[in-house]
Image (tube, rainbow, N blue to C red; front, top):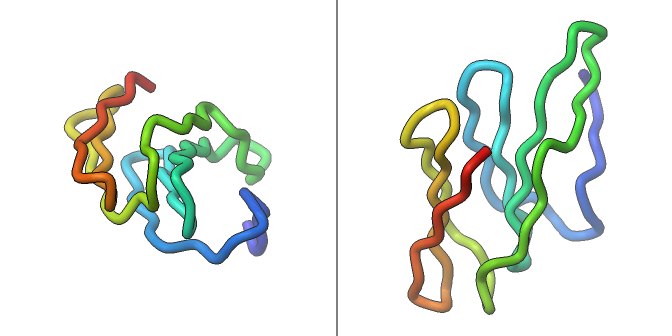
Length: 79
């Protein structure tokens, strides 16, 4: 994979775990991409739970992702 488009804003943070990559841009959206056997990335999840910019991502395990944002909240995602 050499180039992927997940939105129209700059990427702020990436966090990988196995064949999945969590991505946040300079917005309130959190996306999870999965690397497939033919070396492409498929969008597994894309959600807007925050009301302001997302600034941190962390995997708890293969199916649980946390995000923190300028809205002073921590959000949990089941992937």
